[in-house]
Amino acid sequence: MEWIRISQNKLKLMLTAEDVRRYALSADAEAGETVPDKSAFRAILTDVRGMCGFDAAEDKVYIQMYPSKEGGCELFVTRMGLLTLKDAAPALPVRHRAEPAAFCFEETDDLLTVCRVLVTRRYRGKSAAWQDEKGRFWLFLTESGARGAFDFIGEFGRRLPAVDVLPFLPEHGRPICRERAVETLANI
Image 1 (tube, rainbow, N blue to C red):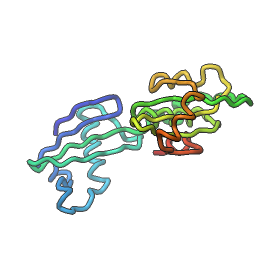
Image 2: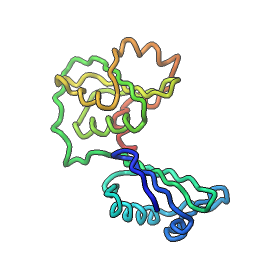
Image 3: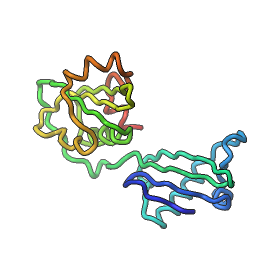
Image 4: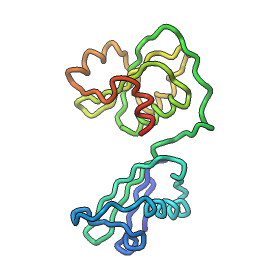
């Protein structure tokens, strides 16, 4: 088994035909074989943790499996959660005045990560998520009241004036979550 660390939360694994047999994986998706059970993936992730330090034991993971012609396969493993509750920052104070804020993300992972962080910070405002025709993701939030409460989102996406974006999306996009997007997407 070979591996390439793509990012902090994503890993590519290249398994040989022998690895596929050892872990009891079915790399031939077109043969109608059943999906491997979770214990096979747990065994792979345990071995990977020892080899490269990629620890997904406490996180939800998204696994993509692509068979190769030689009988092996490639696995892309993405950790979906970055923070646990013990790492969470204190709750953000809430302001009574609700001003919309719009954030644009190029990657799904960035949107999901921001939603998880907002949940750990006990964000309670309204939220909605959309995808535009260019494949970008949009998150609309009501202001929380704490100055700089959304500054961390700049590490994952960019903020734009909501009044400029809101009229454009119904014609050039599709809703992902019209309500409670933060809570919904944080659980993915």
